[in-house]
Length: 326
Image 1 (cartoon, one colour):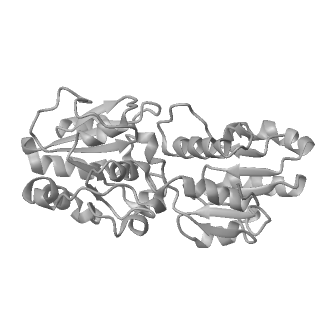
Image 2 (cartoon, one colour):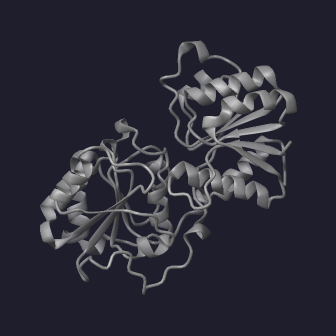
Image 3 (cartoon, one colour):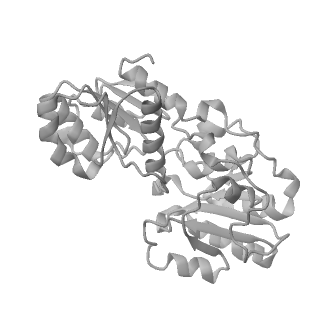
């Protein structure tokens, strides 16, 4: 049996936030000399019998946690002696049935910030506060010769958003900002190449003049380096992204200024980072117009990703939670 069982999606070229986190953690554990077996969440029911027989020592969940993670963790605690660790990428515990609360589930929860739901769904767990960040080396080197989308006008201020083409992504705020700016600025949305758009979303964006692409771009640094501003408009109540959205962290790592809503743990993680501006949804379009057109001097380039947001800290926290020092 492997040193670690990681329940998560591992893709060689991940395009989704939780896939990126899972791959980074798995690669980090392997680089530290540990064997890792990756189990896709959708196959946990098939693996449970094997776990009962093989008795894994450490099981790490990188998705959620939500109802499924709580259920599988409770079963693992009953049927095995595994040490269960949650990497709380996108907590969704408010809808967990009362029948599953108050049970022995995770031994350790690693997350961006403590939440009352953790105590309800993992009452005996130790909470380890670590920002679930990214590996800056993943972004590669930026070449000024790289032009992701040649059809964009040269010399026109350009803003970018990367993410799912869904109604809960706050894309209506980008539409409002683009309509106010007209042809004075370009707004580009790079949608997921994996998940299809919600009905009507692309049409609404295009009608407002937003440029929409759906493709995988490996040279992320070239993507962020080619724009003047990164936009993250998701409303907190919509829960349309992981708790610490990777697109924002990637932009900061590449030195691209950001205008974001105060979503999830972003304000706690980036409050003191130069070049990051927060605006409430009702003021978001105004903030975009001001930053991109009215006061471009206010666009201060971030100095790179703070060390507190490097993914290696999460890998180290998992090793510590597992009782491994190296």
